[in-house]
Amino acid sequence: MEVKQISLFLENKKGRLSEAMDVLAKAKINIRALSIADTSDFGILRLIVPDPEKAKKALTKSNFTVRESDVIAVGVSDTPGGLAGVLKVLTDADINVEYMYAFVEKSGKKAVVVLRTDSIAKGKRALKKSGFEVLSADKVYNL
Amino acid sequence: MIWNKEAECMRTGEREKLQLERMKAILKRAYKNVPYYKKRFDDAKIKPTDLKSLKDIKRFPFTAKTDLREGYPFGLFAVPRKEIIEVHTSSGTTGKPTVSGYTRKDIEIWGEVVARALTMCGATKDDIIQNGYGYGLFTGGLGVHYGAQRIGATVVPVSAGQTKRHLDIMQDFGSTILTCTPSYALYLTEAVVEAGINIKKLKLKAGCFGAEMWTDRMRDEIEKRFHLMALNIYGLTEIIGPGVAQECEQKNGLHIFEDHFYPEVVSPDTLEPLPDGEKGELVLTTLTREGMPMIRFRTRDITTLRREPCKCGRTIVRMDRVTGRTDDMLKIRGVLIFPYQIEKALLEVKGVEPHYQIIVTRPQHLDEIEVQVETSKKLFSDEVRQLEEVRKKIEKHIENSIGLRVKVTLVEPKTLPRSEGKAKRVIDKRQL
Image (tube, rainbow over all chains, first blue to last red; front, side):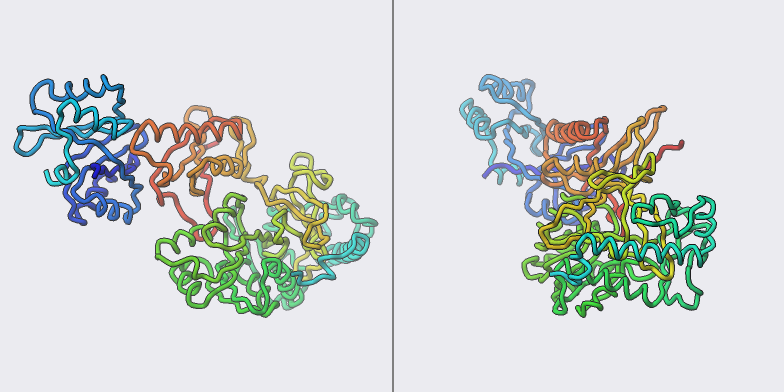
């Protein structure tokens, strides 16, 4: 199963992010990782949560525009050059990265990089071939 | 189905004869009984007897909404007040409301023309008409009510708003015809989905929507979501209320009930009458009104009259869907724009929902239009680049259609105001 990411549309208005967070809090959904892409008018909030279906439902019910998309989660060593290695593999395989964000695993030994590539399947294949640890959905949700 | 074949399928010669007869009579009555008309006719040096043919009407002065305000409240009545059995007023959003007075016969005529309109929507004795137009001073509610009763249909006077009630009644009573403003109809389609109601179980077959401007694209949307035939009704308080004109199932314009209302289209610039087929401002003269005759009333509505025969069999003239008002024409950087044009362009972009707002500002001596569009699920992407592309695509499309650059802003769904009456689509913040 692919790792699912929830993204939602946020108008650049005071309090909107906190409203979204409230919805998740009330639905008792913990956030594993998040990133925000912003422009002058709007933002896109991207989230990795343990139960994407539940989060999607709760947010949609509160009138947020929500989308679910597949992403790749790769475990890299939390040392200088960790991310560079991942990106090099993708560049060499001619795979484009649409966006990415990263977080450090609780143990602190590893960093997890969340990637959205133009082709998820190709990205995964290239990374696996180069020996990177591509994390399963279950593993990511329960980090 | 045709409610009054004799009136709606009259031969041209016959119709013109009847109209001329009635026009002569109403000019005479207006001149004799309403000081306002006497003064206006005298000022224009014209007498009711100067009318020899229908075309001569163009020699008589126009009546504007502002003229009616001068006579507020009862100054334009042509009968003693005790003969008036009902009054209605316009909304009064642009000043003092205008009052319309009805004699018993006027109310009968009103019922008759709305009966014709509802029959065009397929209404018979067997139907349940769920009336979502506001009851009260607004003519929508009672106008439809009288028409429904004339037919003998079961009318459910729900009135405007009360969405929950509308949904319950729609399901429990098995309403077959819905009457309300098109924006409220659209709002109801959303409410139905939100309430988890199975649309297939509803019995609605037709909708009679009007009292505000709407587009064919909105019609498609309502029809698709509600599984009904959505038809356009037209009318205005000053003339009678709803029932001046109605679209038949052919959906190619609204049939004007010419035996009661005489239409002209004039150029908004010169005020000269235009030939059939040309676009301009609709001017109406009531031919039978007793309580308040209206001579050459300027509706401010932009339309075109068409005389080509209609497949439905009616011979009365058709008017195009109203595409703008001479008073809400926006003048942007010197260019005349109707909000309708922006809406049309906007809705041509795939995935755009018919919820939008136009905001006009003048930040530095130059007019700017911002169009706020709700980000539907179909438009949304998790990538900034794609969202920006959607935004630019809409901007480009509007610019190509209206010839002006606009700024499109994506806003969150369901944040733009949904109206239960007339939708407020344009906010003009310019201080001129």
